[in-house]
Length: 270
Image (cartoon, rainbow, N blue to C red; front, side, top):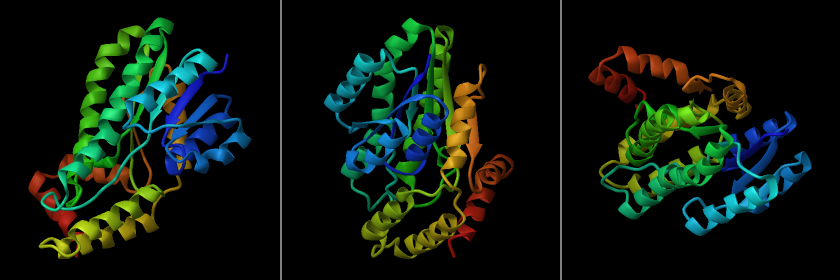
């Protein structure tokens, strides 16, 4: 019997590529995002688009209720929707910071709460949380983004221990540079809030570095294949790392002291 997958943030990037790839490989896929008009082409692959705002309790509950009514349960949840606002901590409004945490952390946690009862009942479930290399390493201007991704790492590690006995696996995926809309949107926001402040010069350096990352970024299918590997393995790894520069950066983070790693990162901002 086909496993039912819900993937959030399916209107672009990793989410869209993963939805298509899994549908092509025999899964019953629901693609969820706010911009439902950007998912109409997914219907051609047999994917069912659902309008979802992960910051709205009503929207989250309605999404899960629809899938349970139509398919019986969510067997595999892929929490991919994300927000990538960048800007100096001093410059970013707390309201924008809260929004980022709502999307990247609390929306993820709430969806997990909603799918767990049926997963426990079925003694089967895969919960895939899309973190980032930015859940292990930090760049200047990314305080709130990194805070949200570091939190996802911790949340996932605790959850994994809680649900293992119910036959549920929790998998973290840590992409490096991957082609997406988020980099451009995050850089634009950063220049808007910090481009003309005391942090303006640093913001320009971070922007240049991101332009380089974007140039060498991997196609989203790289991450889609990692996700498929994780959900099809009986005993999956706790973390899957992939895309441009990811493994190298994590290696440097592991072997260098905090101060040496800071120096290496800041040398890329000039």
